Structure formats: C-alpha cells, structure tokens
Image 1 (cartoon, rainbow, N blue to C red):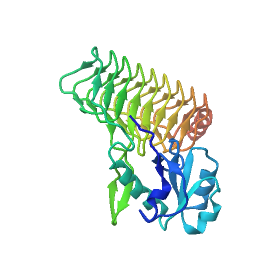
Image 2: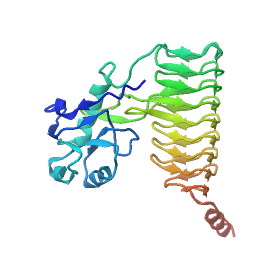
Image 3: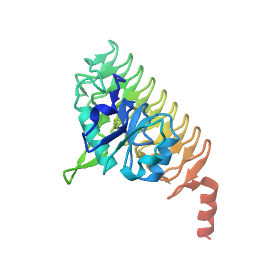
Image 4: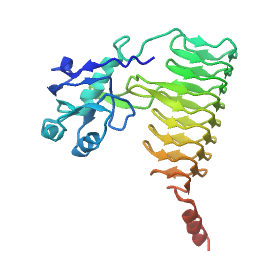
Length: 302
C-alpha cells in the first residue's frame, strides 16, 4: 500500500531543472486539484499560484523565477524554467524508486472469492475481498483493491493506465503512474467497463453499493460516491467527483475535474461541462437544467 514516506525538496537541488529556494517535505507530486496530501505542484501561471495558495494539502510549489515572490512564505518553493516539465520529470523518478511511494505485497484473494477461468489477476498488489466474483476475461492490474461481495464483469479492466500525456525529448508519451483503484463493498460492474488508476498516487475510488453498467469509462482520479447508478456508455473525464446516490444516464459524458452533486441526475446523452448541484437534473449537449432544456426543445419544435 502507499507508504506515505516524505522527500525533502532540498535533496533535489539542482536536479530536474529545479532551483530550491525554500525547503519542505512532500509525499507526492501532482497538479493543484489532485486529491493527495503533502504534494508538490507545478504552477506556471499566476492563477495556478493563487489556486494553490488557498489549499492546505500543498507542501510546495514549483514555479518560474518571475512568480516566485507570489508564493506564500509557509509553502516550500523551487523555481524552474518549465515548472510542469520539471515536476513530471520528478514524478518519473519517484515512480522508479522501489518502495518509496508504494510498498509491494503478494496478491491476496479471499478464500470464498470466485475467480472464473480466464480472468487475469496481477500476482502482486491486488486484494480481493470475501464473496467477490471476478468474471472470465476480466483484468485486474496491480494496485487494485476490491472489497467484499463485489462483482467485476466479463472483459472489464480495472486499474488500466491513465491518459496523462507528457512530452519527453520532444516526443509525447503516456506518463508512468503511481496510483491505483479502490472498489468498496457491494459494487457491481458489468461487462467491458474500464476503470483507470490514479495518476500521481492515491486511488480512483468507486463507493460502496455503486452499480456500473456495460461499456463505462471511469477516468483517472475519479471519486464516485456510494449507491450511484451509472448506465451503459457513460464516460467520466479524469478527477470527476460524483456524489452519493447520483444517477448517470447512458452515453453521458463529463469534462475532467467536475463535481456531480449527491442525488443529481444526468440524463442520457448529456455532455456536462460545468458542476451539477445536489439534486439537480441536467440534460442536453451541453447539459443545462432539465426544465430549461425541455422549454428550449418545445419552442424549437413549434
């Protein structure tokens, strides 16, 4: 599991294109909205520095020399010509240090769990709880934790790579990832659904009692509450948060980083580009308040 070990920023002086100005101890790197504690974040623009200054989960900031004086004095500070590239290079290094971010364990499968023939379970860093069933041709990658009485459907992939792209030596690549997937008790996932692992650490989380239909994509670092219903074909951009008991209709899509409130309803085919309040119902492309959408459609059809 995650070690929660810390690294001193001062130990990286002169590395990854960074100049350390003020020391701090951090456990992860990430972007400003990444839901991790004690993180080191890149801030290439003033708006990013301002957003970071209002958070309590940020240990240090890597920014340009021009913006350094705008960083609050209680936060660790390093400067770099390209802050994002420096932090990504640091992340690549941290992922490659055995035992620094994650402590390996042999895969653990409860004695009464059912693993159907043809399922692929990573030999390390997977935990499967009591009464859980993994269907044929399902794939569970490393750093996947599945609770009790869950069901993972045929050809579903849990813990797939996250779509986080970095540029190295002028070439784009999918960056290495440090996170995993946490599926709580009584979750049912039907066939051919993909749940991507978290990028910088921590878990993409599926809350207890949630039911997920076929062909759903859950992006990296998403957090889905308990007793949520997600219908076939829905797709969630990275870092989407879905509140308890929400309903997501078939083929709905969310932009990254949005929050869908508890008990909200997203209608089928909706394209959601801004947060949805608790108990709100949204529809359309782009999704708007449901009754407003119906009035618009009604007037258009007259």
